[in-house]
Length: 76
Image 1 (cartoon, rainbow, N blue to C red):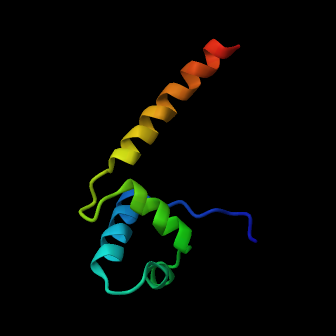
Image 2 (cartoon, rainbow, N blue to C red):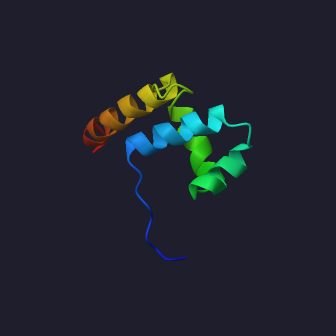
């Protein structure tokens, strides 16, 4: 392993998800074509719809991340 993780911007993620839904290829084949791991594309598909909109899952995850530091402070 190289130890360096690739960073992908939100636009790339949305376009990858759109492509994976529009393509007749499997998710694995689409991920391979994009040069990313299959599980990463599945994770992005949880966050974005086939039109690139955020899913309810993504919205809840963001709300959770905002609340987490606040609850950590009260737990001390």
